[in-house]
Length: 331
Ligand code: FNR
Image (tube, rainbow, N blue to C red; front, top):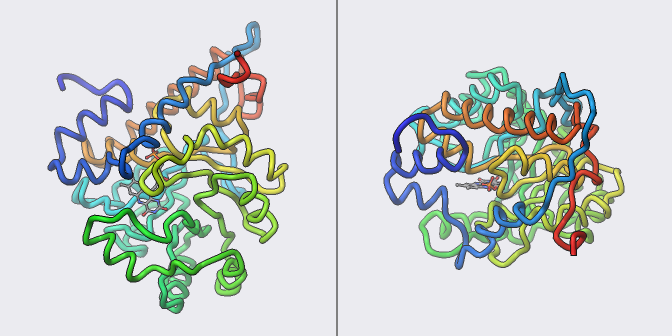
């Protein structure tokens, strides 16, 4: 590709050129037929924006808060594994970019830099994503280490009792991870930490109600970037069901397929408090290291700001359900 990338899709192209094919496939790919991988992105295209005119949009304020932490825009960095395959500085570069963009990074349990390295290299607010191993005491050690090193919340990923078959990583993880974990274990997790717990991987209203009942601090609607169960619905299609079920008891976050500022606007209109981005961040990292991650987040922020201005929404709270129409509503 010639010239500077103009959007996330062009960053994806740059990353593909920069990475060995095997690594690019690992980052960009999805489960099995990759039906949901495509749908996560495509489903956004079937939701239309309904803008308002003659609103004072001379100033746009994208700032918001997540668990009480003020961030510059409702865009967080999703936990994704093994950033050193994308760039030698790995998660340290990603975390520095998060700090520069005044947002929150969720560090993956499967990171290639340690919890301590990332903590000591940046001022960003960081959350720690957790998988639970069969040996529960390992989880306890990791959680307490994250807590000691200033991580502000735990993100328990629950859509991964097994990984997609086929790799050594999957074989290892399937052996080590505790597939028996269930709702009652949230109490156990609470008993070993003072950190707020977010639950990542909720796709139904039914589970969202259970999550709110067991007292989590937030819910993340996610299908793991379509890397786990193929033929789940696109996450943007299930967001509203979850939001309705939760009835404001806990904040709902969203990830899956966000590639444009308009996607973020749509997710906020359907009730998400903020979105997380996974692959776009890795594409930025692979293409240009820390600077690339900053560019990707800045592009998404610029696009969101423009969308808000053109839709008559000067602040995040002005984005409402009446600013979008789903396919069903237009028929
Ligand atoms: C992920 N994701 C993920 N989630 C998690 O909880 N722990 C992890 O270690 C990983 N690892 C991981 C690796 C790679 C390469 C990808 C692409 C994704 C899922 C991630 O947090 C998020 O849910 C999705 O990436 C969101 O979809 P998009 O933004 O990639 O479309």
